Length: 437
Image (cartoon, rainbow, N blue to C red; front, side, top):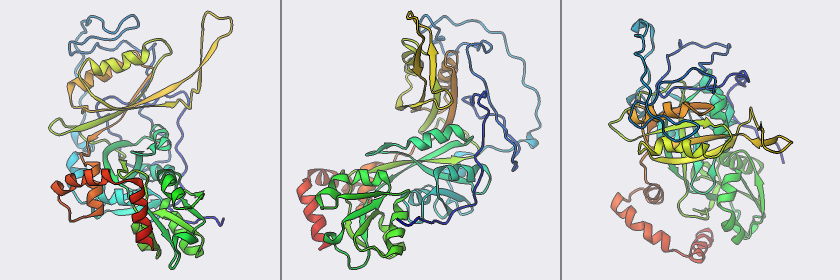
């Protein structure tokens, strides 16, 4: 298959971090660095280990966690010295929620992964209307574009309601020093695209992103299309089919991709499940100021020592303060893939070392969240706050109905949920074949 080309931004060397440096952030915005471009590495790192200086116990009446139990009595701590004076005119103002959510982003450049017409571009437009979108070939390129001041923001997928988490982007969150400043949910409607005059019966194969192919697996099989070709991007698949004038190969992509590349929409809404929503993260170089007067979400990552009950104690620091967890994801610790633990056996046992990504239904401006993270830092080997940002309360069902019928109001959209749920698989396929005839 011919190699795919794409409009791309200039190659940017990946940032490197010292293997001995543990990247960590406080639950509060860290002191701001001077806003300038530099090729030198500048880490605001904090080593969190069992040998670090003792921390003040959580001051919310819950107490601190120790190795012998979940809670310990609070320990009196001497008053801290007053902070050194800093000239306010020499500091840059942090981004606020209004900076990100209250404008149309006319002056913003926003990076996304893929070709024009990708779902990520639609998410970027939804997050920042009227922004200038910048396509990037890879996820890593989008991260680097923000870090190197080529663009202002990046909008990248984090998880899908059918395909699950985008693990690559979880790993990149640790590799790069960017902050999550918002989230946006996008209802995804896959279409089967082909060149003019091509019918479903002519198609022997279909190409798209692996996630899109997985989300349409059953429908494509029942339509008689057995062969799959995985590529980097849905819109890139549509572009390739159009440029090569393929007559026996279709693409799974958006209706916008069909319009951009001059393809026919043979079938619409071909995903196996009617509700297909992708959650995207909005990335910036600096965090926003957290608030408590509107729903906020906080994303953190941490690692723990090996031992019974360690994860239980980590989650309990939030449960004891009645902080809801909306997501937990474990990923191998790539810098420390294995750890050796002494045991009663003569041969030391090697364990996999994991990082835990957790989303909290709370803001870091809330004292409960601040104290919970301080409590976690007392026994975790690594803690980093990835961002505290406004929650996107978009209802996936309503977003899907509006995508099907933009004229539908909220009441009719909710009423239509049961209609879609009641459709059988056979009736849905019959509708696809009828519309493609």
